[in-house]
Image (tube, rainbow, N blue to C red; front, top):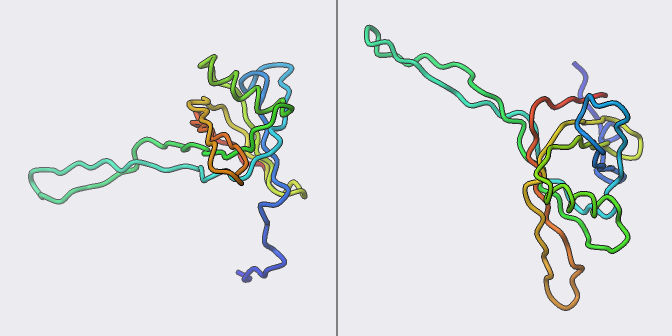
Length: 148
């Protein structure tokens, strides 16, 4: 197996995040880009570990339990003209799951699609020289699909 080089690195610059008009698998699904995303946090599968200990051996056996695909923690600059941000705010008020899409870098190296619940939209005013930001948490529900 060859080692990667710095040339192989994918930078966050150019990454696009979009909110869908419905859930995945729905006909006519369209996406609206959320414009001024500063950071995304981390997401991806994390499995719980269950165990069973037979009395006869007293040795715990372990197994992979349920998998949780996590939660995106977006930081977004608040603007009055960002349609995608307005759709995120509306998604929080509706409590309904929607499709989301994250495309890494401007080369489209990897695309992640998933359904999610927008569980929080919070305003961070900061101080005098700060940009007003929105912190948005999106809990991934169901499958996470990665398309290289």
